Length: 80
View 1 (cartoon, rainbow, N blue to C red):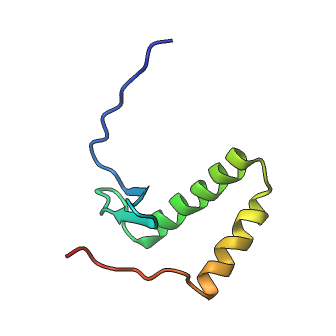
View 2: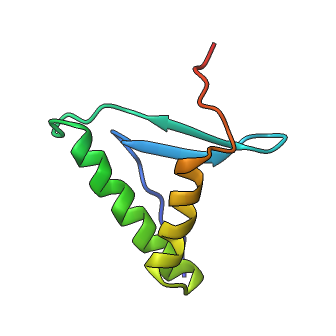
């Protein structure tokens, strides 16, 4: 099959592994979202996709989200 390309015009969230380790997250304002609630729905969708990708229950993913929420293992930093 041939590869298809996709152009992303207005990303909402981009996450990737930084060179040397650690995760990097860039969040961008939405032209249609009126509040943080919209991004909460995106997070819910991400949990569902991770659950399916790793063939585990959604509750297993949420368990780790809750553990990280209570005691973060990384800091949020702003770009220089």
